[in-house]
Image (cartoon, rainbow over all chains, first blue to last red):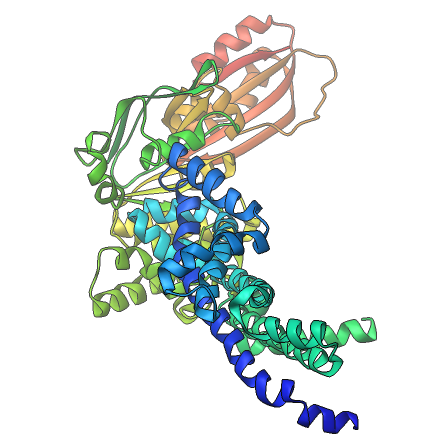
Length: 251
Length: 326
């Protein structure tokens, strides 16, 4: 059997792959959505409640930051996932499948994303916050009109990084019952030594990561007005291409 | 008009209590510009933060047009702040907003109708001469243009007081000149009360009507420019009108003369030569017009058969401030 015939006739590719591919997208989609929904406010809270923040709350900040976020982040994801199976069953009625896996994926990714959000917000200069306060902003207005818009490019990058991490997590989740490309790779690639399936899966996962990264970078660049080169989206691409060309010829 | 009375600000630093502002009292009449000068660490930044209520003063009062800012409850601080427009050293514009959107920012906070916002923004941008840059982002503007946007934004809420914190310290000399001219003319057209915090004596000379010197949290000299410069032994006067450094005489007795107003143009030196049979040699000097008055500071060597005390007495009688230089 030639390589090409194998590619189009292997049941692992023709029958199992499309379904598992969708399952992977589903896991990333659902957990990405909840990570954004919970992680963004959590990151904002971590920033605002920190000493010197908009509304310092030393004790609560300590508890949330040290206990909740750091502990969750220090548990290896494989172990966290297994330990969250009862919770997944409680919330989704099942302990297997992509929806159930999304529970532990979200819980694993939320603290990670929240930390990145906190760091992004910390980079907004205090002068801008002072300016907003002096013009009579409420704390909420400082968050919605200064912190988030000013940090938007780096928030988008942070979410891109989180999604890429979720792709990796989702493969792990697949092995312990989540389904998706991770399970397919495990079943065909590891247990049957079906190299072709393994290669195809790797190519697809790399492609997913590339797409996420490229879309994320484009979006971040479009909303970035921080330097003259990126102030206009159309122009910036030209500038960047020119800069890249200069690099090549060593200018 | 802005009045600050007995303003104190202390904070704890571990075991110690640090006094950042010690009994600061000053008063700026409506329509005038007051400068506050001092070295870094003198308490200028703390004063700014207390005036804008970013920090609450420990005691004392800040009164703007008869209303006490320091007496408002926390819930009213935001409304109170809108009466002060603030211009920062680094403009502190939002990078994600265009010039027009930056100016509109304070108006959005109080839900101003869209048409009013547009009208006001256009008005303010033309006031600072940036109409054609309305849609530019801060990263596309020069330092001076950014500062103009910052000024327009500060004026958006129709404040009574404009507080400028080192407004030109990050700008080149030509741009500094432009921004100072703008602040001066806005003060007149909008009848603002302006407080300029700076470490540049040049700024004080160019635009201020009166000035205070802040040192270690205290105001140690203050008054209208004219008075401050003619103050004997004042360090502010000397900083405002310094003599060129590095001038050395020939070992003869040296006098330092401060000629104020009319005496600055009177021929006291030729009079001196005639009456005391003296040779007078100017070794350093500067003549400037400050706060509408002419001032001259001269360092002279005097060679005369008559005692120096007689010469000093004569000069003082003629209205010249004399110091015998070491």
